[in-house]
Image (cartoon, rainbow, N blue to C red; front, top):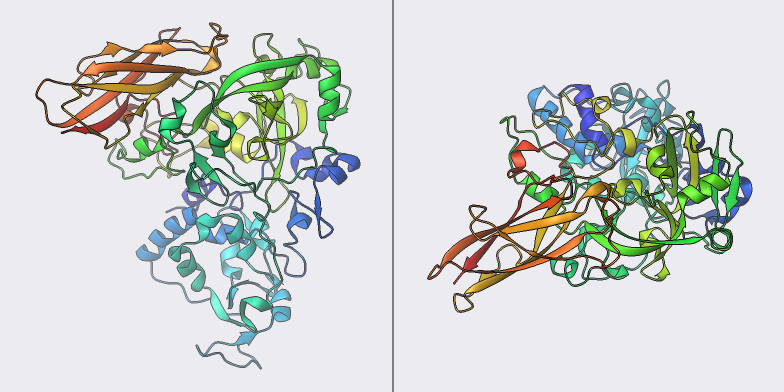
Length: 582
C-alpha cells in the first residue's frame, strides 16, 4: 500500500498523531492563545497541572518528551503496514551504532539501556529511540517514511509511547506490537517502571449510566439502548448517547468563560452568568445525531465494487442519536453584540473551538456556514441547560454549541472560543473526517479535498422495537413496531411507512411529534408507532422495515449499497430488522 493510502487510512480512525495538524487558524494551535485569565481558570489544577489542557496538563513530556509516538502504532496504520510486511521481505532491523557497546545483555541477548541513555537519542544524528514497556526501539529509519510526517513522531524521541497508547486504546492490538517489535534494539533497565512517570489522561472521566452500550472506553463512546429511544420524545440526560474524540476536560464552571472574536468585531470574554444576565434566554428542542449512526449496517455490507475496501469507524447501531430540550442564548445575538455585521461579506464561517485537547494541545474544532449561524430561523444555541438541568460534563457542560438540524460533529462541546472567519475550519475533524464519498472510492483513491464537510443530515429512520433477533408469538397475531424518524435542516417528517415483509407492502405509522415542532424548524425527531397483523399461520423469520419521508418529499434509499462509503457515514437506507415468529 502506498504511503499516501496509509496516511488516509490513519486519519479517519480517530487519531490525530498520524497527521500534520491543520488547526482552524493559527489561534487553534494551542488553547494557550486564549487570554491568560481564561487559560488559568478554565481548568482545575491537579498537582499544580492544568487538567484538560495540552502537554503540561498530563505531565507527559518531561524528560521523556513522550508525544506523538502513537502514530507509528495506530491500528489503522498497523493494518496497512501488516499487508506491506507480508508482501515484501523483512527489512534489516535498525540498530544504532552505539547499541551493544559496553552494555550488559538481557536474556534475549540484546543490550540493556538506561532511561537516561534513551533520552539522549532524540535526533536522527544521534538515532531516534523510543520505549514501550521494557523494550527500547530505534525508529530512526521509520521517521522519514512516517505517513504523517516526521514532526509528530519526533516529539516522542527519547521517551515512552505508553501515554499515547493510554489516550487511544485502539492501539492495544497485537499487530501493533508486532510492528513495533521489528525496531527493537534492546531492553530498558528497570523495565517499564524506569520510564518517565505518566498520568492517565482519562483519570477524571465522569460516571456513566451502566445501561449505555459501550463502543469504546478511552475515549468513551456509548449509545442509547434502542428501547430507550422511543420511551419518551425527550431522552433523559443519563441515557443520552455519548460521543467523544478526546478525554473530557475538567473545567471550573465558576471561573469558565468563552472567547468571542473576529476581524472587525469587539473581542468578548463571557462567563455563563454574563450570558444569562445580558442576553434573552432561548429554548430549542433538538435532536443530536452522530454522523456515523447505523454504521454497523453499512459495515455488514461488502464494498459494492468488490474491491474489499473496509469501512473504518465505531460500530454504531441505531442509538447514536438522542433528543433534548436545550436552554441557552442564540449564537446570533452574541455575535451581533460583538459587532458582527449580518451582511459582512468578509465573514463566511463561524468556528467553534473546544476545550478538549489532544496531547499536543490541539483542540477539537469545527465550523458552520455564516448563513446558518446568523439566520433568524437557524436557532443555533450557546447552551448551558439540558432538559432543565445544567449540562452534564459528558455532554459539554458548562457550555456547548447546539447546531440544530446539523450533524452532531458541529455541535462542539466545552466551547472555549468562537471566531468569525473568512475561511472554513481547517482542523482535522472538519477537513479529514465527517465527509462521505462514492461507493467506488476506497482508501487508495480517497481525496479529502474533493468532498465538502457534512453539515445538514439526510432523512433517516430506524426501528427500535422489536430489536434484531426478537421472537414473536403466533398467538399474538400482530406486531407493534416503534421507532424514530428525523431529517436535517429542520425538515419536518410527514410520513413513516413500515413493512412486515421486507418492503414488499407498506403501511403508514402514527406519528408523535413534540408539541412546539414547526415546519422548516422541526429540529427534533418524530417518534412513530404502528401495529400490523402477522401473516396468518406464518412461522419462521420475518423482516420488518421502515422508511421516512420529510416535508420536501425526500425519502430514504432502499439499499445500503447505493450510499456505501469507506467512512460508513450518513447511512439512511431503509432500516430492516429480522425477527422470528414461533
